[in-house]
Picture 1 (tube, helix red, strand yellow):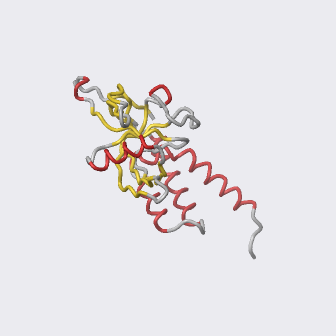
Picture 2: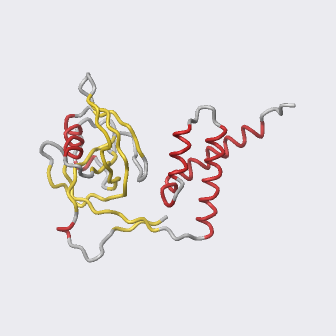
Picture 3: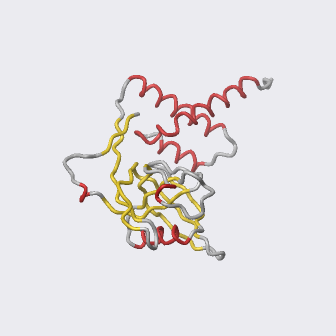
Length: 197
């Protein structure tokens, strides 16, 4: 899979400025919905600004999760541009946020660091040729994921629906390696299990 920055005759002034949410030990991929707990005031303000303005937010991973107040050098430059689906303030002051990743993006520059990080971002366009190999991999991922979801007693209908939605188009590519490993492990366990007669 290849990525390149969108530079189709646009100048730096056309880059979008959005709030930044540094994530600890978690990556949000495009086309993925995640619920997270947020406790840092700077991060809560970034989420609130994005939600109230109905604006995207950049979800980028911290290089070291132990850093409690990360600066620009502590955050990876490439992340996922997403939206805040829902915010829920909890009694202990933390916020539970439901986030949906939309597309990959790169930080061009930090515009502000006052109340929360605001960054100028440039979207990263995903380029993937639909070769025979890619098509075959997609069929294996779809088939294996469906088998795994159907055979698991812990998997519910909602998870099966989300998996099938992820398998459409390019959304499944970030999950293909992990899913294939899980399918292979599940298949080995089934192959080695005693037969019911």
